Length: 507
Image (cartoon, rainbow, N blue to C red):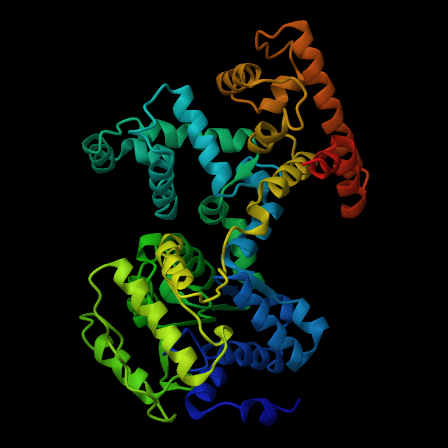
């Protein structure tokens, strides 16, 4: 592909943003203005300028966005070149960096990554061990506080020394929250596990406490690109700044008017105040919307204009005017559902369109119930999308817990899930004693099982035999993995050896 053939596919604003490579750059991309196209072609342009693909870092917020971008780049430069790019979500890229440098942080390179269910289970265990009231120390609220602390780069030690934080916890009748935070971090380290927030937190710690590592990645990544910068939190912003402040080889794309994730830690100031961090920042604006009608663009613009603090831009569309926007007021969720179902029934009868021509978007899963009832009353067939994830299904999580143990037997949450599944006579009382000894000795539960003389848990001979049998099964999987068994072979062995498949067949 010649230089003109890919640049000629861009409008004037998009092309200017793609061609500029002389310093830090902010691309303000209005809705439907070709943001992904600009990022994609920017990477292609950098490759045309001689940048090695493995020294270009592109950070996105979702795997879907990374996948779409990579597919587009593959079409332009080929799969081999595209595969060498450091492209992915913040969490996947930082996990890759952390695995390479895990020993600097006291972790093993095969550390487990806990999902929200694992984290919640661990917090519940800690609350129970500390004999605290779970109605006051609600696990979800405790996890939210811990997440907020990590995203603000507040360590357990800093948390315990902050008068403001401790006073806020005291007023909320949760004075022991700092102790739960400390215990949570200690248990994760003992289990060689990180949660999603840790992937950001420990990347910052790694670069803060290891100047040689920071210098290596500053020099290694010759250009850094970030998508949806308005959604970055403090921890993400600090990492990006550490990597690019000296070189200035940074391109961030975003739109302050589309910042809606403050409840998840996103900090709008990261994009609004970029010039304070990068004094030579050049700003480019993508203002033509290719997606929506003029009525929609004008209505959205009239609302956004009311924002007090914003980066001014004039989004426009050259599409048709489109149908007028209708605003409907409803007194309750039931009336809202009635209106939606009635309108679909009317449109179906009037136009003859099939049911799959209609879509209902709602904010939370809890809203679906009244909508479903309203649709059923009018005999409108429907399908719910976005239900329980495949990987959140019990049988899948059970199997994956065994896979996790094969990789990292110190993973407490995986062990707790399958130590008596399928049933092998190891009850909650035994597990409670193992957990208590593990916490007291600051080791993993697996270590207690493997070294009963060194870490006595007060178990009788019969129980120790059952634990030894369980450990033998896990060691078998660990050894297979250590000797290089491929994923299919190991998975097949796990399913057969544990009897999971047979049990499911009889369910």
